Image 1 (cartoon, rainbow, N blue to C red):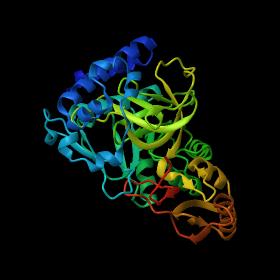
Image 2 (image 1 turned 135 degrees about the vertical axis):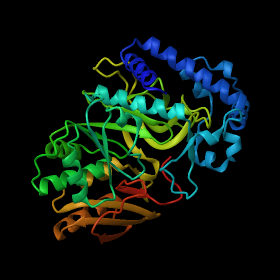
Image 3 (image 1 turned 90 degrees about the vertical axis):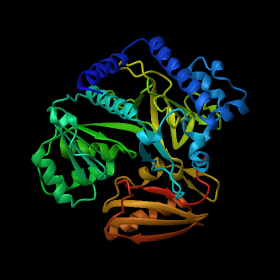
Image 4 (image 1 turned 180 degrees about the vertical axis):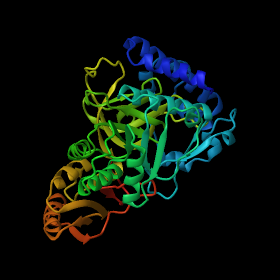
Length: 424
């Protein structure tokens, strides 16, 4: 896509944000029908899935009609030979392979992203950035895993000037590079930006002041949002995304949830194969309307979330995801039969004096391990809070550590369930 084509496409994408809801639904329905016709004709797995469900592509007239297609867990996709889930009329060799980060199975699922889809994803991300106040000539800094490309055509023409800092680098080095670059927009996972913010506070640094702070890839807690805005003097805008489809939703200035990119995807909250009742949380099923080489149609991505029951007051017609409760392998299963979500766990530990970081892991039925970065006082308080979560009968092992290790993708997971059966 050349510069002029990209600019014109971006203008079109931005205009959609405030078009009437009927127009948006028409765009979404047209893209759903096109994707299903393609998948039925060229992808063996989806042809057989629709056949067994008694569904023909012509039966799907709107995005709501895809509820008649069974949800496919990622574990099922991982078990299917690649040639059965890849379109036979397209060349996968022309695509970038991206590994999803949600699975602990050791057998990851790879999505195939064509050049056209990659370009569309980039423009959709810029659309959200611009709604938050970013402009193409602003400098932006990223704190993330080292999988980036420093040289791009954007940089060569003087727009989207970016600095990429590895989350695995020494913290002092990260901050010094960001200070020298002076980004208007700073993006990274909440845990990566938390480390930057705490360093800024401890070292009394006053010249790292991005106007916009974008968090993505992990749950953002209210206390951490407040810390980032206080330490870095910018406004925080959280994102919801997935490797399977890029940015799925983004906060506007109202901060009332995540506007879902309905012209690019269909996001459902489900109970089994059925949509969850209005206002109830459910497992996220994703349909990526841009993915044709290895289509993703009602794929359970491993998240638990809740759709809003009313539109955002900002006037954008895009539907709103009210909140993301966490990944299904972040829910702890207690001996009482109750499931505890990561939000409840994180809220329990919030604000403890002497506690810098923690991780609560379920290693088996009734077996938990608490790792803490804490003072003696913080350790004692964290042990007490953890015992209140897991119950008196559970075995709780507590260990102090210098830091909570990052995952391969540069994230910190506060709550982990390693048991075979995670929250469904």
